[in-house]
Image (cartoon, rainbow, N blue to C red; front, side, top):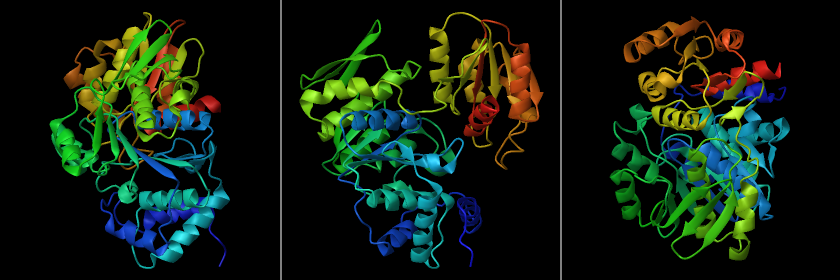
Length: 423
């Protein structure tokens, strides 16, 4: 039988399980045990939360590499190529390595059904275990407690933020969601809470687990000044650092939590922590996190897709010089579209609403987006388009010199804009 290509494997994985999401660890654990359940690395760090996970992983990856450590990172979803999800030593996994890993997983699973995400998670575990790396950094896909990533006991965890998203799986309020996200922590291991006002459900669950909780604003903090910022820990550690090159005020909180995790885990020599943290501020790999493609009008791409992420976008816009903002926006059916629109409000001069129903069965048509916009912002100016490409073309045609085009709302939006820009 002819071996499958990577594209064929990915198509196969999407067809063999009836559900896109099937939370629970029993099935994926059974397969991992059949594969021998080897150690992924000398240390494992897991990053969960509603927003900020990808940026925090990027900071950790850069800082650990600056310390001379071998690093493997697992993130999801991808933007342009599936290979982006698994990186070892700063390089994306190649097709051949992924195919060989999928073949090993398929041989081990027998009649146990796995989802597309579970195949990918096991592939990351498999490739890391064969790469002799020092630290594996794992991003939780959805929730925490029942996410396949939680199969591995982390030596330290970061929980960035907790807000309303994926409520059909995680619960209807921040306390419920916080309890699910706290499930990635382990007894006597550091659990870094990056949010200043986390839900009580998160804190109570971390306490019941017996994790060593370190909270932003209590155990560690930061303060900003012109072109520099200072990170402080209550044990007396103080670092003076350059501004993160990732845009948006929220990135100071993400970077601060990443530093707290390194400080708590002691994987970096204390005398070298400032140098390592400073190096981590420069160009961490985090595409589509307020990624600028330059030009005039300037094009900015972001994967913000829920109200909390939209509030972070609003905070960033508030720091920018005046000028009209054209939004290219598309969303999936499980997102709080009205909450996103309300968070940005009158900061958006004109909405170019893009349908995503051609890209995925979960995508919303532009007419649905328009209906929500008219309800929550009755005076908003907008036009509708069948897809992201048409919306982007219209935004570029209507935006003037000195104005901005902000493309956001979904990984599908970001990927389409990046592809159009590259083309």
